[in-house]
Every structure is written in structure tokens, then in C-alpha cells.
Length: 346
Image 1 (cartoon, rainbow, N blue to C red):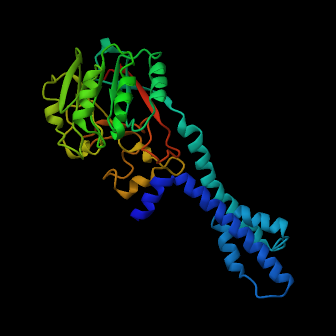
Image 2 (image 1 turned 180 degrees about the vertical axis):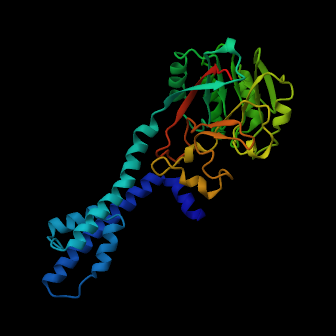
Image 3 (image 1 turned 120 degrees about the vertical axis):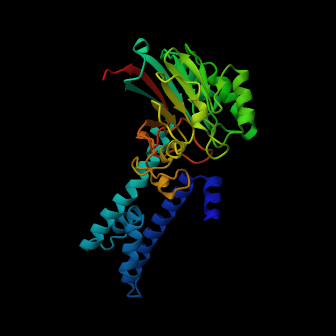
């Protein structure tokens, strides 16, 4: 398994698939053409089972060309059906690859209204942007994101961790993020790919406040807390919210959402997380990769969007904004989420 993973990381999963797709269709076309020649010369034939197998296993285009150009198996219903099925099967990865080269490379800005009984009424309309899993996002792209966010009247910007530590790439990313204007500042936690000491130092250098099992009062009635990464260190939710008042609206920031199933979240009103990338490579949006259990212990629970902690606290898991080195996003669009906060009466 590891050699296959190394191959994918080196050459790219899309590139390897395109090579496979071209090869299987060329092979399928060749089999049809060879079998047609054998039929004309009354020689030993290629079995229909073999032709049908390659037709359905991704070789639909090659089979169609073989039927049309070599005029082979054109009268047999089962081959017409197999070609149709093969074309449909081939269309599925083609749609996903097209999505990866288009929408999955376009950052979306998701506007979400969040209502809570505990949100301070005087802060209605307060706007919080959440951005996570930057990884190898380019400085140019981040500069474009900063320009866009500067047009959206933000009160607060929160960062969910996971920068790229290779070649100190994170330094440029942090510098560009610091260009984003907010009323109440920029705060962030570490991710599992971060060297927190270096990342926190870079953040502080550019006026970004790290949250390290700690919290701070943003406004009267609004307390922000953040915890260490679950995989790298020792997150402690109780410590992070220790200085909050009983009637505060408490927003907790964590990179890995699993921590909210392992520790008490009682007293917290809203939780933001990242880490899962919406599965990174999904099947029409369903994060099948998360079922492996290597990223999260809770399957697709924290794949994307709203879920709940073990104590019933709403958790929003973002798909993130960057890509993990050479692994593409496939039907898992990058995003920045902007929450507009409102009080709802009981």
C-alpha cells in the first residue's frame, strides 16, 4: 500500500488516473481490432468475456471506437449495453477530474447566519470569518483572499491551523493573512502539521494572537477560546474556557474536531474546526476517505458542515482553503466561511 501512496504523492493521483484511463481504452480498442481480424481469418478468438470486462472496466471509449471503426460486435445487444455502461462508468471519474480542475480550484466564500439564545443582543450582525488548513496555498492566492475579505466588513478572523512548514512556506502565508482588516483582530490555533513554536512566533510577529489552551474576552458577553492540537500536544478545553463568565457566549476553536467527543463541551455555545478537508477527495461530495478512520475516529460525522459534540454543542467543520501538497481537491471545494451572529429569543 505504501508504494502506491508514494507513487500518488510523487506523480499526482489525477495524472496517474489519466495514464491508466488512456492505457485501458487503447488496450480495449486494440482487443476489438485484433478480435475482428482474427474473426476474418478464422483464427482463435479473444473471448467475449474479456472484451466485455475491459469495456465495462473503464474502456468504454475504446470499445465504442472498436465497434465503429473495426465494425465489430455492432449487432450484439449485450455489447451495445456494455458500451453504454462502460461510457457511464468512465463519465464518473471524468466529471470528478473536471470538477478538480475548475470549481475545486476556486475558493468560495460561504455566508452563514448563526443564531443563539446566548449571543449578546447588542452584537447582532457581528461577522466572524473562519479560515483553516492553509497548507501550500500560494502567497498570491492568499493575497487575493485578503483583498476579498477586506471588502466584507469583518469583525473577527479565526484561523484553524495547518500551515506548510516546508521551506518556511508558512511565513509568507501568515504575512498575507495579516493584511486582512478586522475590528477585533485575528486569532488562531495550531494544526497537526504545524510546528507550533515557529508558527506562533510568526503569528505574533505579524499581530496575530495564538490560542494555546487559552481564551480571551473579545467583547462584553463574548469569550473566544482555543485548544492545542489533538495529535501533537494536549488539548484542554476546560483550561481554555476557565476564565469565561457563566453568562458569556463561548466560541471554541480547535483544529481537530474529534476533541469535542473526548472532552466536555458543556457551557460552550459554538465550536469551529477543520482538519478533515471535507474528505479532500470525495465521491460526488460524499467523503468516502474518512471512512478509513485515519483522519477522524468518527467517520463522516465531521466531514463538512454542522454536526454536534458529544454534549450536543453545534460544531461547524470547514473544508479548509488549501491543498495538501500534491493531493488535489476533488468535489471538496476550498472555502472561507463567514458567520454573521444573531441573538434568538427563547
